[in-house]
Image 1 (cartoon, rainbow, N blue to C red):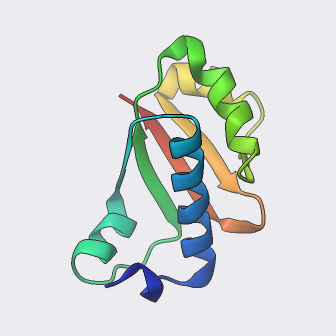
Image 2 (image 1 turned 180 degrees about the vertical axis):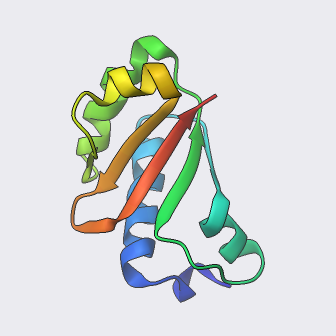
Length: 105
């Protein structure tokens, strides 16, 4: 499946994730359903799973930089949740269902 075959809302959110990680110089890789769909057979998914490498001291700055790309926290207190779960829950603001689960490695 080519990226042009992704549903437009998911493609817009994926583009926002790429723009954010590139602008913030955050090493990252897309995994999960979107990656499987791009590299193999289409798979039903409504989120973007991305592994990123962000030192914990930089998490707050990363969340602020994500806002520049319409990626907003999905929950209150996202940093505290990430400290417990190692997952930063973001959503692409124009498209509510296309979410980004960012796992710190």
